[in-house]
Image 1 (cartoon, rainbow, N blue to C red):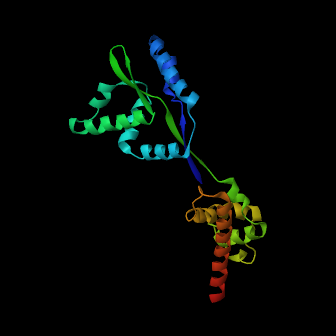
Image 2 (image 1 turned 180 degrees about the vertical axis):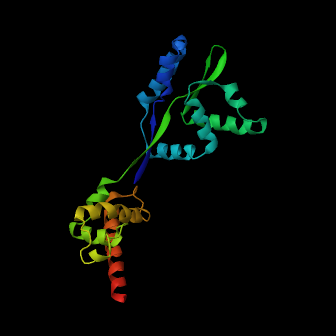
Image 3 (image 1 turned 60 degrees about the horizontal axis):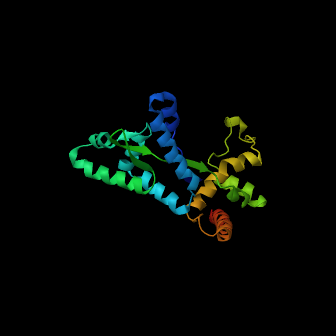
Length: 216
């Protein structure tokens, strides 16, 4: 599967607007900060890589989780950790500010942090990989790499195993076969080159299976 990471406006903006009408001026500041960011934001592969690295850090992810509830005073955030950990937390906050994940601003005499952009992960199966399966290979690959073997219901039905359609077999097996190939191929590199690599890998998989049969 392709796993993607993307920036989205934080949900806490809506919660703040609906649940805290007395903080309308703060909400307006918050909305303006988020709107200004997304009006000029352009997703890039480098930004996605940075987001993956940030969210893989438990300390940074903890800060983001806290700010998903709404803006928090800087002192309150720092008080959540011990004195020995405060330096590391401040460093994490600075990184998030530099990466435009959070924003620091002054409100009613306090220094607040707000979550400028939240981040979500999405997963999808690459459509172009499905299209690369040659029609005459689909049934063979399905039989060789199906994660569920064909079985009979009881002993007396051995001569009449349950029948599966070719489409059922392909659905069960293609994901496993393609996942094995994906582990060996960088799908972010040249698309045409990948088409050839994937095609070659399917031929290799089939060749390995045929060779094994001959030896048996």
